Length: 215
Image (tube, rainbow, N blue to C red; front, side, top):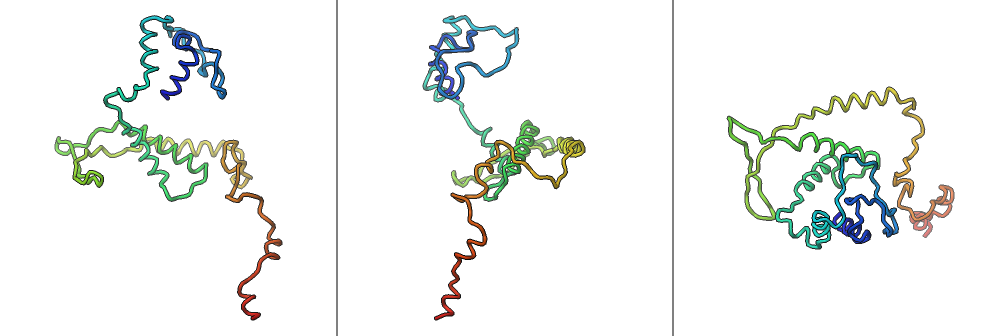
């Protein structure tokens, strides 16, 4: 993300960026258009003055190649926590179809958003902890026990599923058309070419048992 912002600032010369009200520029990256992709901006939003102290400070921060290194407490724990949620709903070593895998990821996102603000559990007014052994560190640590999940969104989610089924005029036995972005449109199997017919395969098939019985 930082590299994308830095590339944008370099393409725009650093002074014709969206923060100063210029949402189009001359040079693009050859893939996306040379303009902003956002919609209309609110009238209350004010732009920075070109080459003003605020604009100069912003430009210096964004173009700093050591930006991430200068952040003292940079951690990816929140992202790792979300990935753990994904593995709960879509465990590894299992094969999922594209619609199923997408649905499982959406459920993981809903679960994470509804329960990420849980407080630590308490017992008799004292916070509850549990022991956890770290294999990499080779030592025991204590971790807080969070309050149990409520899953209050489940009834509303079930209602929405039934409602969508009731208003759907298509039969469950109807032919399913793959979505435009479904990867199965590329290839249904791992074959490099179209398979021959069953009749052709039977004609070309040679059994080792038949060869051994004729000896």
